[in-house]
Length: 111
Image 1 (cartoon, helix red, strand yellow):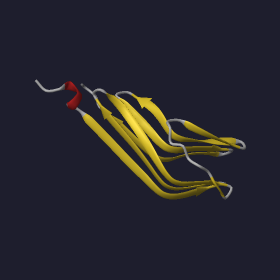
Image 2 (tube, one colour):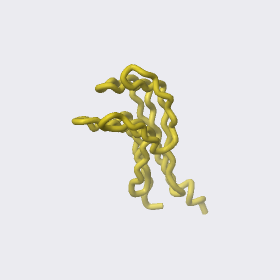
Image 3 (cartoon, rainbow, N blue to C red):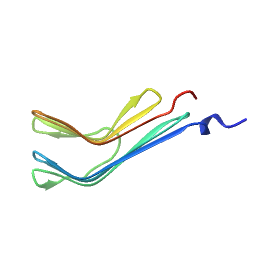
Image 4 (tube, helix red, strand yellow):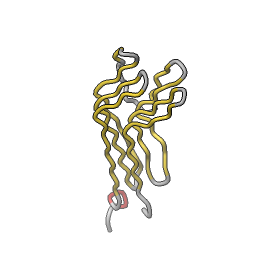
């Protein structure tokens, strides 16, 4: 009999080399999502983040929020999905702007 945790695995990885939008600039954003019958995990790496030209130290703990005037950036945004997980490298919300940078979704069904 096979181990039920090894029956299904799904991994997704996306990357964005560089993006500038308004006062926010990001470089080397990588999001990874991995789902198995036992659960799902995700992680993000970011090479650089600047806001209004100033470098920002990036903590990639899940759902880290950086407040901005009139908006926010959520780093390593993790959204549970049926059977898996959606991981957004950065989710930028500013007046008139709602942009997701590097999004990876994985899911496993019929475990």
